[in-house]
Image 1 (tube, rainbow, N blue to C red):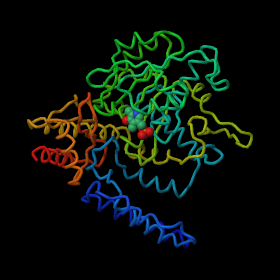
Image 2 (spheres, rainbow, N blue to C red):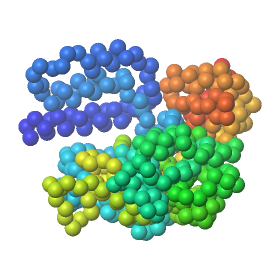
Image 3 (cartoon, rainbow, N blue to C red):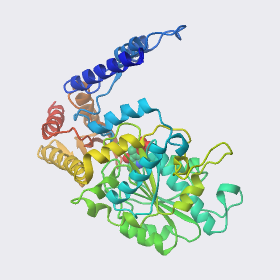
Image 4 (cartoon, rainbow, N blue to C red):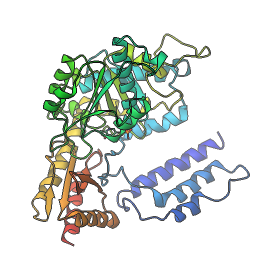
Length: 453
Ligand SMILES: *Cc1c(COP(=O)(O)O)cnc(C)c1O
């Protein structure tokens, strides 16, 4: 305690300093790797040193290379900040050092996972009996959902894939949309389903799967279909009801990658977008993006707990079982962080109306940014702004990229770039609870300034 208390107190002071300073420091400084190596590098230390000094050295050395993603001015990728209760709970989680893999290791984490499972089903409008696994993000949630699907469709064809693998197994048809996220391909790769062996259904001009083309792709036999709520570029949601109806007809498994877009289901004014999501068999959603939980936090939900558990469960003689739920039955990881506590804290502190307000506010800011930008003849808004994503273009590819670079270098805000339908575009994502109307206006102004230049 004599070493720990001053180190934790110093860390708290440094954290407050960072968070207060991040209101007006450049979002992402231009930093060269050697500068960071100078502070973080050097020879492997030979001897122990004082924890408080270590914390100070880390803060000093890392500072130039930190990207301020949680102060309302960051619009890159789809990131999200951190709601206060969740950040505080994350500190406690480190102090507690719980391992939620087995309930014997943490009855508290086991029950918190059980409670969050129920809260999430309710909030997202999914069947009340869904199972849930807590993962590092949507990548592993996609993996777990698709693994459950692989188990389920092959078991229905009389094959135990978990015991016998894919050697000699009936062929599985995997249907994806042209607008899918890259983590779907990687999950399929991990599962032996191959990222090239898929049937790709074309997407419409907003990146949504075209359900008319889905019908042709469903040829019978064991089949998994991956749909999406929230295209990373446009925010568009696949027509889930129509897709689910096609999928049901042929007895296939429907997985929905809803990393950020599934949160629309928690907002009364946006819920219509995800209508039909509840008909799917598995879902992936992130806590660390739009719910504003600190990294890392993803969740897989599954309407077939038996298949979910069969695909994931870990057993060994020394792994003591209790009457509680064991986290490792539902997630592809074994030992892991008790990421459920910050998730629990976010849900508990925001409540149903707070989550809805967060989601709706981000979408309102996105529309406001899009309207401001669209009023300038130099800017073209490329997507229907239905959620929290805005895609814009300024003149040609070169000017578009140059404008993004100018904004990034100026440092008051940050947008990333992407390619949309073969053309360069600037991607603006509003996912941080801390973003205010003033931040949104500042972001639009920064881009208009760059467009004028
Ligand atoms: C971010 C994202 C993912 C991957 O999520 P991670 O949390 O980075 O693992 C998957 N799908 C979509 C649609 C995403 O936006």
